Amino acid sequence: MPYFDITKKDPNYKARLGIIHTAHGDITTPQFLPIGTKGTVKTVTSEELKFWGATMVLANTYHLWQRPGDALVYKAGGLHKFMNWKGPIFTDSGGFQVYSLAKMRKTMEAGVLFQFDLDGKQEILSPEKSVQIQANLGSDIALILDDFPGYPFEHSRSQESIELTARWAERAVREHTRIVQDGDPVNPQQKLWGIVQGASFEDLRKQSAETMANFGFEGFAIGGVAVGEPHEEMMQAIDFSIPYLPEAAPKHLLGVGTPFDIVQAVSRGCDTFDCVIPTREARHGRLYISSKNDDGKEGYETIDVRLEKYKEDFTPIDDTCNCYACVNHTRAYVRHLLASDEMLGVRLATMHNLRFYLNLMEKIRLAIEHDYFDDLVKNFRDLTK
Image 1 (cartoon, rainbow, N blue to C red):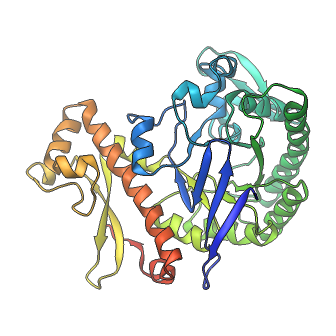
Image 2: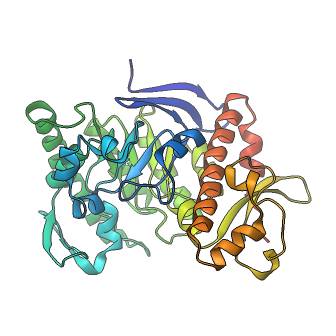
């Protein structure tokens, strides 16, 4: 059985339907991964995620390394057992923290020297260490440690970044092979994926993608996006990467994104996505609502339910959604909970936003399956006024 089955291709775009086969179940693609940074998707249970249609979650290598520690998770039998998630798990490499924790780290050939925010301890996260941590977590998809400089992009710095990432990739592959062959990993069927960097520069994306393809990874992530660049540059990063990666391999777009970004990225050949937007925005009272404009074009809008105008709004959050929050509660009630700092408010908002994103992925899959994806690409927009 191939690792990734492509079951249908769209005739007009690079979009496709697929199935990624893992030791903990199949992942239907295109698919969105809820973020479970510390081994939990905030405020919701594993059973709820499964019920809503999530097939894979993403956990954060750096944060689990800090607390509770990958050794403890290994003793628990791996992250699947520790968090009681029976489906596939995707772990990042700690590479995003190389970018986001710039004031607390130093990048060098050996790896990244971090100063932990919990206790001030300093430790190097090397390409080998990142692989070891992810092996202890037992995820189904692990990533190589990568380096990217952030926005605004500079060609010379980006060139250094892809060259360092390539050297780290070679070391990561060697260590992952050693662990699978000679170690005692939680999940011997774990797959290590490469990461394409290169900012929005066509020559660097091509170079990075070809280098990663030559390592023979069975899957790839496109990184260095969603760091402040305009939407157009994000799409360029995809367009400059996809042609140089094996068509038969699944491709993940790291940290993306808005519903509009996701539809556009699927059209360019991306298969899976992760982003904090639905859960983070929920904690701030911003909700995603299905909508149509005056021309009948389908899309969505975001509302800030904390606003005064929703105080007496006794309509559902989204009357097209059948999630628990929308079926049982009103905008006025959710607003009241958030204004009162009641935890249920964040929980209901999170429920809805995650269900919106998972419903969006189902809508995309159905559009590809039934040959109307072209209409979705052309008409799906952020209609927020």
